[in-house]
Structures are given as structure tokens and as C-alpha cells.
Image (cartoon, rainbow, N blue to C red; front, side, top):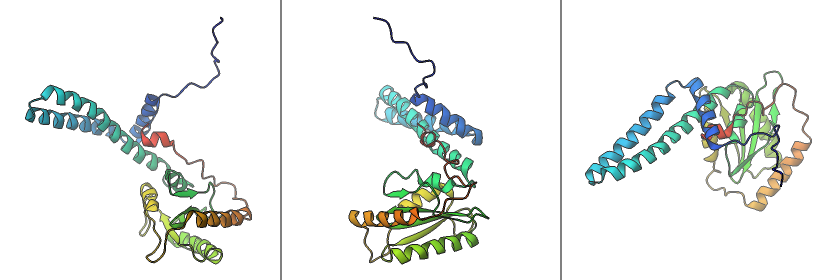
Length: 239
């Protein structure tokens, strides 16, 4: 039987170590101390394991375990600092907030486009829906983003009067949430005391009303593409 020939134009399969190398290169561009942090984590893990081994009179066994766990410690440091580097690269770009919000795997659903935009300043509002209600996440200076988000909040409150609407602002000014923290802050959003989480049928009704509202929305002006600033999520996770 003739051997099956490989397609030279076929994309090469990406291995896990390729993702690790990519994450390392990306993080090292903005974090020159990265090798030292990784080395410190690995050495500290081995040292702790060796001390425990000497106390337990089993230094060889714990040394081997320390070497294995030091690799995990080094990978954890790489993942953390690669994520920080990824946020630093996209912070301040249009759509950066959506890139961060898309890392939320469960509980919230965000659309691919802003629900409100100022064509002149390119301040935008992104909308997420989950059992705690609706969250509006703004990009832009507080004095402008507040007005934009408030107009959207009032519009939603008219069609969904019993749904909690929370406004979060991304930025570095007073009262705003830094980009690296917006995902964790969104996960912690809860309805006020006395209000319950939406049930699955209620959540489906809310999504249906919002989809109908979004279908009538005019197209987003050119020049704002929230997908262009999206980082490599595998690289951000270090794998």
C-alpha cells in the first residue's frame, strides 16, 4: 500500500510547548525580569521540599518531588505574568474591555459588538447578561462614559424594569476598574439585597428582549472593531 502523502500546505499542529514558548516570548517583551521570577519560584519550591525531606529523613524522595513541583510553580508564575503582559499590550485600545470580559467562561454572556458608542470620541458600552442581571461595561473617561452608560441604562430599565442593571467603568481614573481586574469584578456582581437571581426561564426571556432590541440597532461606525484588540487567550493562560 502506498503511504499517504502529507499535504505541505496543511497547518502544523500546535503543541503545548509551542503555546508555552509563545507566552514566554510575549511576556518577556514587557517583563525583562520574567526569567528571574520563574527561577526564584522553582528554586524556592525545591528548597522547601529539601527542608521537608531533611526533617522527614527522606531527602532524596522529597528532592525529586520538589523538582517536579518546581516545574508547576514556574509554569504558574509564567501564566500569571504572561496574563499581566497581555493586558498591558491591549490596555487603552478600543475593545480591550471586551477582550478581558470574554475570558469569563461561565455565568455571563457578552455580545461581540458595543451596545452604545460615541462616534466622535469612540467611547463605548458593552453589555453582559447573566443570572445576577445585566452589566454595562464602559470604556472612556468617567465624565463621558457615565453619560453614555446612563442613557443605555435608562433605555434598558424601560423594557426590563425588574432586572438589576449594574454599570462598571474600565480605566485608571478614580472610580474606575483597571482592565486586569474587570473580569473578576464582573464575576462578583450580585443583585441588591431583597432581589433574587434570575431563573433560567427569566434569563431566556431577558435575552430574547435584548436580542430584539439589538436587531433594531444601527450598524457600528467604521473604525471601532472590538475583535482587533483581542489577545491570544491560550497565551494569557500560559498554555
